[in-house]
Image 1 (cartoon, rainbow, N blue to C red):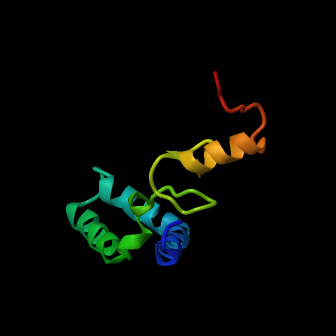
Image 2: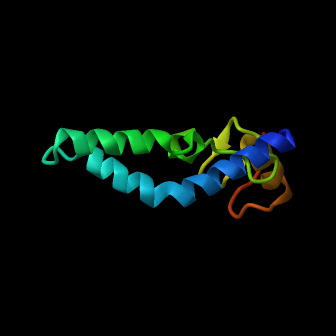
Length: 101
């Protein structure tokens, strides 16, 4: 089980990303538009830099929904490999059977 603080930090980042997504997209569009004057593009980049760092989508990290484990994460099921095996053994995941020979 991951530290509760790490799980909460990740939730906070998700909230910030949603909150600033539209503003970030608008500023990025202005900053990357070659037809606009250089000063306007530069001001947009400065405004973008003043936004909270945790509002950037690249700072998000996938975590298991059940344990908070950050590694060996299956995106399709949103769980880690350990929980995938446990849930598969218990029959909680449709179509998955634990292999044995």
